[in-house]
Image 1 (tube, rainbow, N blue to C red):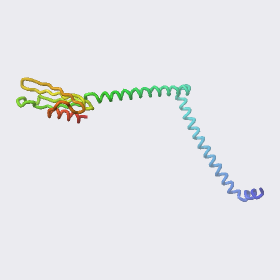
Image 2 (image 1 turned 120 degrees about the vertical axis):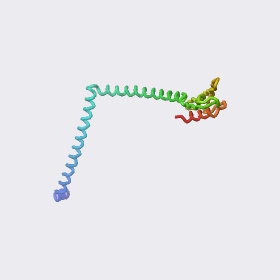
Image 3 (image 1 turned 45 degrees about the vertical axis):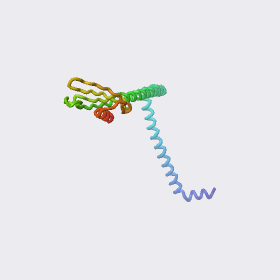
Image 4 (image 1 turned 180 degrees about the horizontal axis):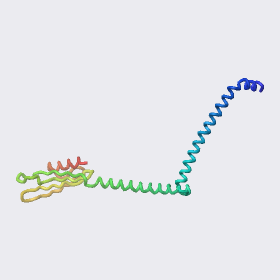
Amino acid sequence: MDSLLRTFSENTGPWLLTALALIIIVACAVAGLWLKLRRLYRRWRTLLDEASGANLERLLEHHLVEKVRLDDRVRALEDLGGRLESALRRSNRRAALVRFDAFEDVGGQQSFALAMLDDLGNGIVLTSLIGRNDCRVYCKPIEDWKSPKNLSPEEREALRLAQEAP
């Protein structure tokens, strides 16, 4: 024990400097923690003040109920969006019109072939042939971008243009 006291008394300066450094480090750590605690306390007070004095548990319960309600609404909207997307694929939104002269003695490109299809390539090609004394209208079915009936070059062109339509 005497040797320990002698060692300490002979090296008092370095020991005191080390103790002072440790005290400064601990004081800085305490000051930093005190500042963090003050910021946390301010945030906590802000949260409680925004609750207008209401019970925080009731406020959180209200937010949870609202979140569940919104989740249900989002799910319903996603279902509706899926149904609308499916219906849109089956709607006739691809259309193309090709005008032409069906007969040499009738000009002005009054005859036409009109293709109306959905995104799956199902629909019709409606053709109107205008002559001097008569008008003929033909309707041919289209399934999967093909027709079981023979198509004229103008009808094939209307089908191609409808297929390329956005």
